[in-house]
Image 1 (tube, rainbow, N blue to C red):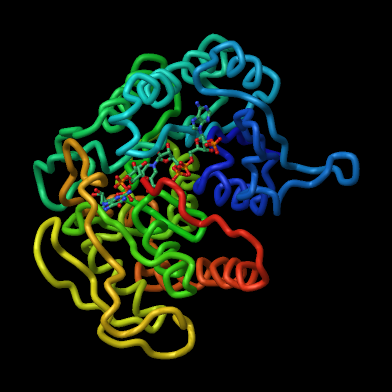
Image 2 (image 1 turned 180 degrees about the horizontal axis):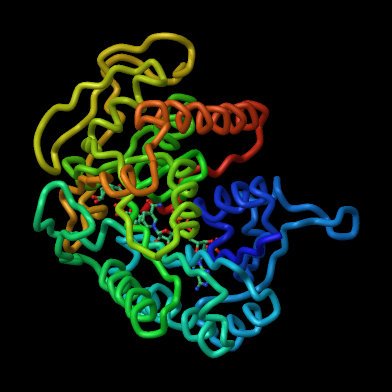
Length: 373
Ligand code: NDP
Ligand code: GDR
């Protein structure tokens, strides 16, 4: 039985990857951070009480800033594969916490690679690095592929650029099987609430149910190449099953604007929106409402506004990936379209909003408004 170790197992990708590897018959180990509240909501359904069942899924406390902890876990588990998905992954937050972001995202990667080397596991343990389309930043070529030059535009992207090159360097210097998946944005109902797609689907579902009145957005002109996280974690595993380690772009090859994603999300709730005005004065106004998913919304309501607080000091305006290499070498094609994914996310967020609305109707205090990122 193969053993895999996942950093960031409590995150969106970590949870889908853990499910996927368990289904492939792996023994899966995940590193989770200690937190004052439970942070295992995304993996609770695959966790089995070791007192009751002989589980193949094991959790270890750890942190990418803690070398001795990482070395100890790797020496105990001796994994065949390590998936380094752990990161301070929010681009806007990286401008607020640049040093921490570099520590976790850049040096965290080095710590894992050094632990593999220190423990003499270079020939046993294969290493996947969660690289990102943010490396392309101010894009130098359209669409972006494996050979497109990088131009990072945030402390997050700069930290990930170090991680990218240190993985390449350990591959070349020590013959390690290390590879980078340069993944474009991928989303799901498990996406963190402060990334743009989930902020939109959650916010509009709350508005539809009368829990909030307006969605405040940043740059709605931004263009992204969005795929589904389930399709993308399959690819992470495939990259580690090749004869030789290589880096791959994973993307759909289609891009849409943030505004378009808002329109689709609203339509999935039966709401037709019209965008009026320009720049920070732009608003999204309700033109029609159909069906019974949005009882709290009526024609003429302004449910989308711009808040400059959500603009970034340096923006990545456009990203569009070329996944030809992944298709040709690995036979990978994404199975879920962005429109299907949007519908799924809205459906899941609507269920949560409906539960909250019911609680509110019965006099319970429901807190839905948090700092939105
Ligand atoms: P999430 O933000 O959902 O998950 C990040 C994970 O990292 C969480 O489990 C988090 O733990 C953990 N983490 C954060 N800081 C530390 C730390 N100091 N030590 C250990 N673990 C830590 O990200 P995604 O699942 O969306 O992304 C996975 C990886 O892929 C990330 O590295 C991200 O940068 C990268 N990526 C993501 C893309 C996307 O579109 N989703 C695209 C390209 C790359 P906790 O739950 O406790 O916060
Ligand atoms: P991104 O994702 O920065 O691409 O990083 P995010 O969803 O946060 O932003 C995408 C685009 O939408 C614009 N935007 C807003 N973003 C947020 N979060 N909130 C808003 O209100 C808002 N309004 C407009 C952003 O400016 C941006 O242009 C994600 C993360 O998962 C990274 O870890 C990963 O590496 C990249 O995707 C690929």
